[in-house]
Image 1 (cartoon, rainbow, N blue to C red):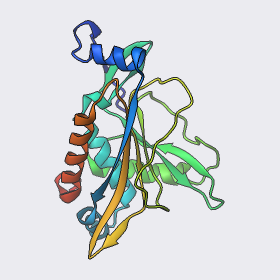
Image 2: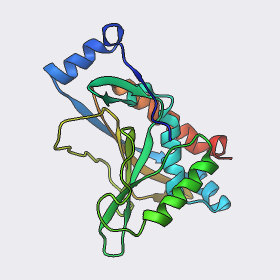
Image 3: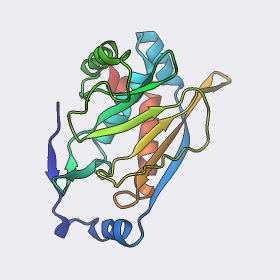
Length: 217
């Protein structure tokens, strides 16, 4: 499991003044929700008999490796950039209670998918908020609300931040004229990312969703 990181040299970090401003002077975060086209990705999952949620988790985790501004956290009070983030997600039980699981990210989708299926088999039916104990600080929340198609979603943390990772939340699919879309919300701290970074991430993710075979085959 990759939990490697690089300590940020804050004195020479180009983001330092913005980080100070948005954490000390004007603490700010923001959330953006967009409708993403998932027609091609859905077709790929059906042709290859693969769970869509696994592809969703993988593509976001893969894309995060290209965005260091979204992989910043603390280790022993030092600000660091992690090499990768591992997706943390929820499963729902028959009584509608939920549990939080995570799966170690691997660049090879086939390997990641096997880990994902193994985690579901071992922990998916266990009750409680976190049946699989966290083993690393670099877990990123990549959630879904498949029961509702929303236009906005904003999580409200009620504890001090220990990371500056984004929080993702996908909504219910919507199909019209053989085209399927999915709302996806991204919430992030302004200390480490601006609107440009979030916009770039969404645009790159849409490119992946249009041609999922690029990374999945």
